[in-house]
Length: 166
Image 1 (cartoon, rainbow, N blue to C red):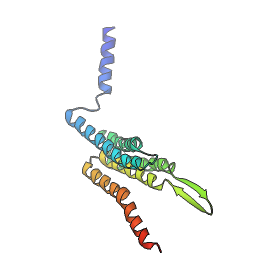
Image 2 (image 1 turned 180 degrees about the vertical axis):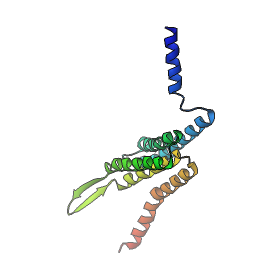
Image 3 (image 1 turned 90 degrees about the vertical axis):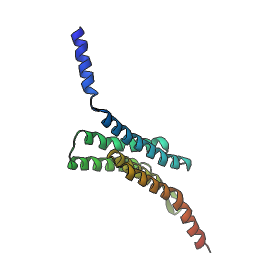
Image 4 (image 1 turned 60 degrees about the vertical axis):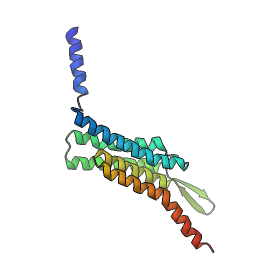
């Protein structure tokens, strides 16, 4: 029975050996944590404004997107394979985002809701992909730009609307 447990132990070690050294552990941790934190920042902004897709949703989208590119990259996938992975993530997020868009029939005009939430989730996935590929500085810059769009642009639009009123 001792040989059997030894075989189990060796098999378990082999199964959990995908992170081989401290450098790789640090790289994986930084990329996934960066995606999680940046997703949380965007999610907090949306949750603060009372939107349905909040902190947890944005964090999961960002970390999931990062993981989808991180694992093939660690496995040594070539650029063409990574391109297909990225295309798949983008398409998959498109389906998730489509579920956030609603059209309500009010009077003569239809009112569409959820476009900004969908675009925000799409952006969050892109930021997660960027983090997973090891482009953390670009991911941070993109998050700041997204916050600027989400936080400042509504105020700018309101200023222009006030100027347009008769």
